[in-house]
Image (cartoon, rainbow, N blue to C red):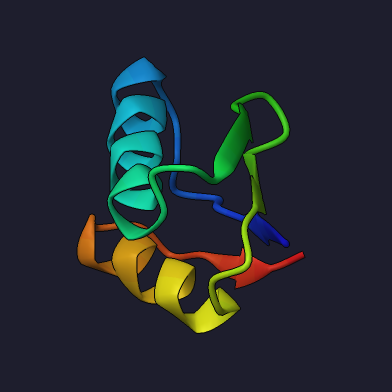
Length: 64
């Protein structure tokens, strides 16, 4: 799954989102492309779980 996160702008944002994703699925993989403002997640967990946790971290994820 992939999200566009336009309000992600720095390394701290990347770390915050990565940490939030890992809390939902510690075995999942997360790749963040700060320049493109995209977050790619590989997990068997539902997409809504990740959308919710990224929103709780203070960002606005949009399915890409």
